[in-house]
Structure formats: C-alpha cells, structure tokens
Length: 257
Image: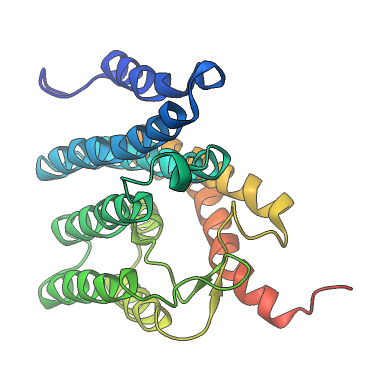
C-alpha cells in the first residue's frame, strides 16, 4: 500500500466521519435527520471512487474492501430513510435515484471493470462479460417492474459485486464465469424472485444474519487478499448460495397460513 492509499487509520477516521451524521439523530429536527440520511447514502459515491482508484492500480483486496464498506452503507441507509421519513422531510432530494446511481457504480460498473482486468477471463470472454453486465444492468436498473409486492426483486437484481468477489476468491475455469454471467443476465428479465435481506419479510430472521455473514466473509476474504487457504471463501460461497436461491425457494415452497 503506497502513501496515497488510505490505510486502516485513515479508513477508520473516514468511516467515523461518515457515520457520525447519525450519532445524535434523536436530538435533531426531522428535516436534519432526513438530510443526514441522504448524506450517509451519498458517502457511497466516495467509497465507489476509492474502490475505482484501487481497481485502476489492480489492488483488488483494497478495492473489494471499499466495495464491502459501500455494501454496508447500502444496507443501513434504507431502514434509516424509512424510519426518518426522508420522502416527507427531505423531498428535495430523490433518495431512490441517489441510491440507484451509487448502486450502479458499486454493484455493476466497478466489479465489471475488475473482472475484465483481473485476467480471469481471457480474450473475447472478458469483452463479452463487461458488455453484457453493463448493458443488461442498465436496462434492469431502469425497469419499473424490478420490485415485487413483498419488496423482493423480480429477476436477478444486478448484484455483480457479490458474484465477482466469489469469482476472485475461488478462481474457477473461465467457462464457468461466462456461464454464470450469461445465466444471471438472462435471469434479470424473467420472473424469478430474489430476496431483499432487509425488506423481504418472509425468512427475514434467517436472511438478515446471512447478509451480515456474507458481508463479514467478503471483508475477511479481501483482507487476506483472497488467500486460497482462507476459510472465508467457503463462508462466502455458502452465504452467496443462500442469498441467490432463497427467493426462488420461496416461489416453490408455499407460505404457511
């Protein structure tokens, strides 16, 4: 890590400043609380830039650490936005649009760039992957039918960051990666259900801990620079399988009473 790269101390100070906006929310006016949530969401753009800078230097461990931080922010800003009624008290900012812009960077664009530059996909397969991922995801993010009545996603929700970090960890044959990219891109536009770990009420008691576990294992895998003997890889694979297929399982298994 060179002198220009934010180290653990700098990262900690930046996170403290980012999350400090919600420390005393109980004493703030409703308008200030709502604006503070938007400010928290906007830190995702900063984390995206830090991740992109690391990706340009091919510091994949640092890049994924910043993406995991952005993922964590994305997980908590939604519940805070609903709790503090941002649509009522900070209506001048479109939180949904802000979230989508940052999600496209951190879930799609930067991970796709990393996959292309990583060497995991030789020749034309790298070009195929980045074109399919970025194009299909742009269309999906603009699809007004992406949410279901139970606040799940209709179709694969473009969480390429979650797939690609697993690919970095296990480094499968490139044909497996091409097949997964192709299959999930198609799955964006067919009526398969994918859960939102926070908002999908069914199985939330299991889904939410799984999402926390995925975040932990992703951070751990990146922290050890994807060491092949790390147990983080297995935890990452197991939690990814659950988060990918839980919604489809809910479509198959009828809900009780």
